[in-house]
Image 1 (tube, rainbow, N blue to C red):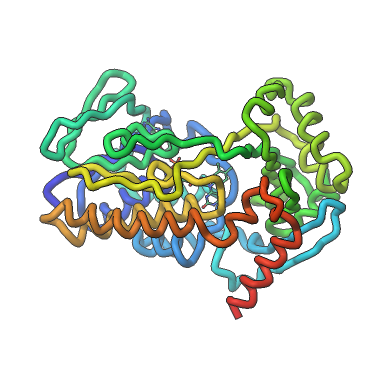
Image 2: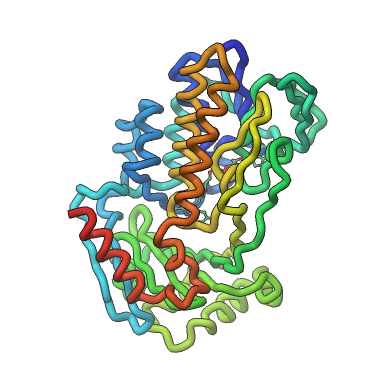
Length: 379
Ligand SMILES: Cc1cc2nc3c(=O)[nH]c(=O)nc-3n(C[C@H](O)[C@H](O)[C@H](O)COP(=O)(O)OP(=O)(O)OC[C@H]3O[C@@H](n4cnc5c(N)ncnc54)[C@H](O)[C@@H]3O)c2cc1C
């Protein structure tokens, strides 16, 4: 490869690309807005699938490191009715294809696999500009600039690279999640800990749902989903943690106390996360010398695939660049054509309707049907 690769964003997608390029001996620099690897906690658990995320880790040569960070037993799954009745339960026998890891640990193994200096921390991109003939100028918030002949936007939902390719912007999906954490749950919050079990638990209902999982040790991490417009959330003062918790809990009036405890007993201030998505069929015509991956290319409301897809994008783009060292455009075309199809398929996958909690179909029964069909297909 004659052109060093410039990646914007050291998320899971950008780092996977950087690692695969490094494995193939292709020079790469990643510019990341955050000031250091520890500037921000990295959020909860991710299940890494054998059909996408794990393929990326194989291409990155990091399967041993991945197995070392898997949290055993966390693939267990339960579906509860809002009255606390357990409707479905699947144990983790260690053979499943979706082991769970902490996002921060996954990011760490990717970072550790790169030569020192590959990631330039504290480089927030302010704007990007085409210079012609496939070259781009990237301007950082501090006024510094770099010029590159291959620019990859791995900078997530609000990508500063995307405008070079597309006018699309993410739109609110009509749903937000409120994140809560309960620590030392087995001793301090035993009813909630029992309801969640050893892995993940979901209690769905049209317009409202509680999803939680057991992270390392006995920390419970819940995502409380509410289908409401952003104006509705704006009336809640999330700076007042107690009032916000009470207001969200009131929406689950009548639900089993072991479920509402995931809201009322939280040990941290509840965090509101509005959810946005790009159009499912988002794509662009080939523009020389620039492309996107991960959320920058195909942001969806969380469906368990986003981080997995971002990593696979990174691995496939890295593989395509290595396979076409003298033909950058052939590499980008090959990568984009496969990525557009893959992301559109995931965006419209069968379970998406159930996951859309505004849907009347977001019921324990519909979820049960989905799990039963999945188990039948697996056998
Ligand atoms: C509540 C929630 C739960 C989720 N759960 C799951 C799950 O269980 N499984 C799953 O697979 N996916 C899940 N996702 C989706 C997943 O988080 C994303 O799809 C994934 O992180 C995308 O990776 P990425 O590398 O494309 O972008 P990101 O992870 O967003 O990384 C982008 C990076 O770019 C940096 N950056 C941004 N702007 C700039 C700039 N201007 N200049 C320089 N750097 C910049 C950011 O700091 C960041 O480091 C979830 C998402 C949410 C919101």
